[in-house]
Structure formats: structure tokens, C-alpha cells
Image 1 (tube, rainbow, N blue to C red):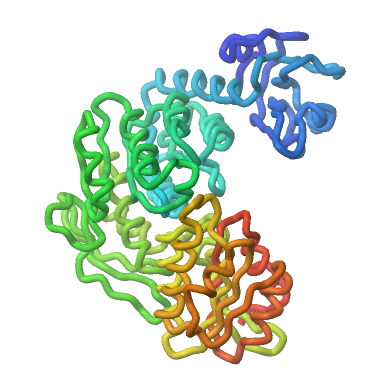
Image 2: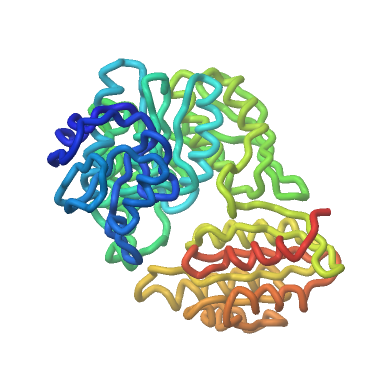
Amino acid sequence: MQAAAQWIAEAVSGHLVGPDVLVTGPVVTDSREAAEGSLYVARRGEAADGHSFVAGAVERGAVAVIVEHEVDEAVAQIVVHDSTEALGALARAHVDNLRRGGVLDVIAMTGSVGKTTTKDLLAQIMSEDGPTVAPKLSFNNEVGLPLTVLMADETTRHLVLEMGASGPGHITYLTDIVSPDVAIELCVGHAHVGGFGGFEGVAAAKAELIRGTRPGGPVILNTDDPNVEAMAPLATGDVIRFSASGDPRAHVRAIDVHLDRADRASFTLVAPQGEAHIDLKIVGRHHVANALAAAAGALTLGVDLQTVATVLSSARALSPHRMDVHQLTVEGTAITLIDDSYNANLDSMRAGIAALASIGSDARKIAVLGEMLELGDDSQPLHEQVGAMAADAGIDTLIGLGTDAHYYLEGAPHVPHREVASDPEQAARLVIEHAADGSVILVKGSYGSHSWQVADILREKGTNR
């Protein structure tokens, strides 16, 4: 962004100590990412206090800093009560300025699963229509979202945002920073029910996106999910429905869905604008719904149907550890690795296991399942339910990782080989011990379970085939 330090101070209700310099570089919360002309926001985190890294940010070129107290550095300092709240306030002022220019539209999405893949797909479509800014990875919280907003500038035509929540009020906080012109509700699942006080709390939290949409803004709903469909009365503008099951009531739907041997879907997209054939390159039938959500969003913003179909047929999952399929040789054994290890809940576990069953239909199947976190009192039954899914899918080896991972094994007593690994290194070693040529391995779990490290270890040990 480009703004004077005094303007920033006023935007965040802080006061400027030092010169009124011009910020011309990126806004960062990691001092290692500071560059010439940047603004560094010193946050107090769980593991470290960002004020300790101001000197490093200045050395890398930061010309101004947002701090909660003055620091002993010769740099313009904007002193505020809370740096994280100041970051949000700055993003709010910035997007308001851009909107006054009249060319920016904002489309935001939420859901228990699929947010990041849908964001990646939609960003690739919208980039064909005009300059587009979208989050890196899963920048969808009170820090990541404002950092994404602050990446937009006067040339940006589309701002694609992902809004996540780990409790009530979180999405409201984000929509207070930037109220979307178009909202997409993907699904309501059993993700992190412990932080919401139960399933009903999850649904209410996801509905905060619709309540926070600009008055009259279109809302895109997954009509295959009754909990999402129930949100329709909250919309103040048009309600646009999408359906991966081909529901004829939906405005955007898929018909004639087929899967190839790599579990990649092809289908006919039916919309008010016509029909188009789509061959997805990303793995998993569940991505049909994500593709439809992205298509509905793009069509709502005026992108033509053929552009939507062309981009979706070549689009990639830009964020790592999301249904990444790798053909590897590890210690002389040829394997297929399905790396879907970034996060997990009941619904995404079901999708991952379905992909493993499909790709490994005639092969030895191994699942490394890191525990699902933030489930509260539902942890045991939900882990056992996933274990039963694994057993029903014909998995030969089930490896659990994490404190509650033993419940996977208890839910799958008939899986031939079951074991809980003490750490990612042991989990990777168990995979290698049980794998035979042609084995298909699924690695999945919540980020905090470190299942992604298992996938990284296997890739580091292996060579691409």
C-alpha cells in the first residue's frame, strides 16, 4: 500500500511518534518479510512478542511500525492500544478508499470445508477477468484477512476473500473489516464444534457472513446442504443456489458427473447462461461442489460461461497439502501419495478416504490419519466414525497420529494393520514398512497434528516417478 504515516495513525486511532514518512511497501506482521518502504505491525503472539523484532524489520527496510508502546528504534512509530485491532482498522480504511474509486468488488466465502480450494479456483477464474487479489494459503483470520486486503491497490478489480472462524463472532469481526459484495456459503460440517458450543453454533457462526454482506448483495448457497439452505431468509439480495447433486432447483448445477481412475471429476455445468463441459484436474469428487461454488461466484460477477469452464478445466489447487497427488519411489517402493494433510474434520475425512478408495481400488491402501482437533466432547465418537469409514473403504493399514488418534483404531477393529505413531517420523517409517509396489497412501489430519510433516518426510525420502 502507499500511505502517509499520519494518515495510518488516524485510520487506526493511534498517535504518530516520529516523522510523517510515506509507506510504499507491503504491510507485514513477520519482520522477516519486511522490505523497502514497508510497514511492520508488531503483534503480541502466543509464542513471541513482535516488539522484539522491530529492529530486524527496520534493518530490512521498514519505514514505519505499529506498536503498542514506544520502542528504542529510530523509525516512525504509530502507537496503538492493540496492534491486531489496528491492523483490521487499517484494512477497513484501505478498502473503503479503494471502493470509493468504484472499480473494486469483494467476494467472500466460508464453510466448514472447501474454503481454500474454492478460493483458489475462484481467484484463477477472476484473474482472467481483471487484476485479482486473493489470500496466500489459508489467510482467513483476524490477521490473514486484513493482510490480504492490504495487498489490493488502485488497479485491483476483484478481491477474493476466505473467512474462517474458530468461535462465534469471528466472521462478524471480519465482515466489519470488509463487508463483501457477494457471499458464498459452502457447507456446515462438524469442524471444530468444541469452539462453537455444538453443531448449531457452527451453523450460526457461518451465517454471520450473510449478515455481514453489503445490503442487497447476492448470496450463493449450497442447496445440497440443508443447514446452508436454511440461511436463505437471511439474504437481503438475490439468492443463487448451486448443487453438485444436480438438483434442478439450483441455478448452477452439475450433471453427468464421472470420475477417472485418478478420482478426477468431469461433468456438465448447467447455468442460466448455458451449459459447458468441465474436466477437473484436481483430485476428489467433492471438488465438484467447490468448482460449482467458484463458477457461481464468477458468473454472478459477470464472467462469461466459456471463460469459467476453460479456467476450471485447467485450474490447480494453489495451496499446498490439499489433495496433492504424487507418484513417488521411496526406498525402492513405488507408491502413490495423496497429501491432504493441511486440515481435517469429519466431512473432509470422508472425502479423503473416498479418494483413497477410488485411486487405490485395486491396490494396497494405507491411511495416516492425524487427529482432528477442537472437537470437544465429540472427539471420541467422531474419530471412531472416521475409523469405521476407513474400515468400510477396505484400508489395509491404519496409522494414527496424535493424542486422540487411538479412537480411529477403536472404530476400525477389523483393519488388518493398526498402529498409533508417536511422531511424524515414526508414522512415515511405518508407511514405508507396510508399503508394497503400487500402494496408495493417504495422509490427512488437522494442521496441529503435524500430519503434514509425514507427507513432507515421504516426499523428501522419495523421488518423483
